[in-house]
Image (tube, rainbow, N blue to C red):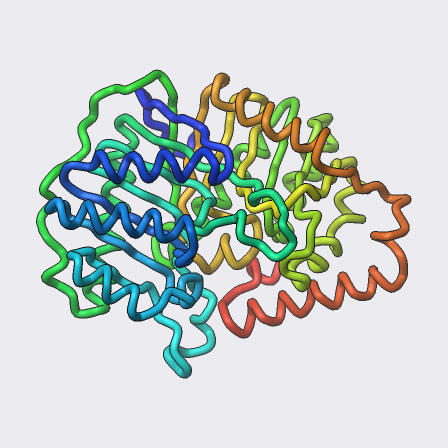
Length: 390
């Protein structure tokens, strides 16, 4: 794909849910020898959070350089006492846009650090949609959120390392922590670890504002047989919707796996406002109902795939800092596709145009009211609205 810089020689491993992710992450922290960087939107002080924090403290006590970057909104429940405890053990903790009353102009409140990324010894990275939170602890006693991450080894780490160091430097300077920006003690190598082509794509508010969106659009526009997208918060702009509709009209099988349980009512109903238009274009929609859907992944033509933190909504695609890995590899794409197809067939239900629960007059009114409220909020608290294209 001409607009994505794929790097060869990588080993990309798929992890499904926190059950696979957290043991791997904890073990990697314990094995680290030099340096750890963690970026996360949510760090909750629960069973999982305490395990990861304890592992980071042990690493700092072994003399490692440990860097923890938290989002000020997503991690605002983490107590000052626990942050101070981490600082006292030698962990460097920075907060991206801390949440205080009148702390920032309202237009910037939605510009969050939504990345979930860990880089260890510049030799291995974990990237995906999984926050550091115990999904077993939920009032509805549901199974853990449906989500994915990837383990990255190989030359792609050069790009990941550069992006992680750059964001840490920016936030450190804002917090007057210049002394926390030190020369790189270690750097990734260009040595091949596997045979997979992959690209690391970020979204920020400067040079990479539309990179993730453009990568998706390029994949969709080139699709020949199949597009499967699983996304927790799906509210794309007109370009994205038209790309999906055009793909369906040229005979591509387009399937969307979306949120079936109401976690955030406003976003849930705003997404449903799009259903009728998508279904009329021949796009298949499934709602995942076994637990909360938190995945942000896609597979195209059983070859192109992406796993990351970016939802397909204006908040992720136009406001938040995000990070996705795009993989061009049949083996990886097949594994992700099999997982998604299993979720579609066994843990979801199809939405049809005859389903009165979705298309009653009352629901129609509620859905579009929520849609325009989200649009208003994004305009007031952010900027743009897909160039007014929705």
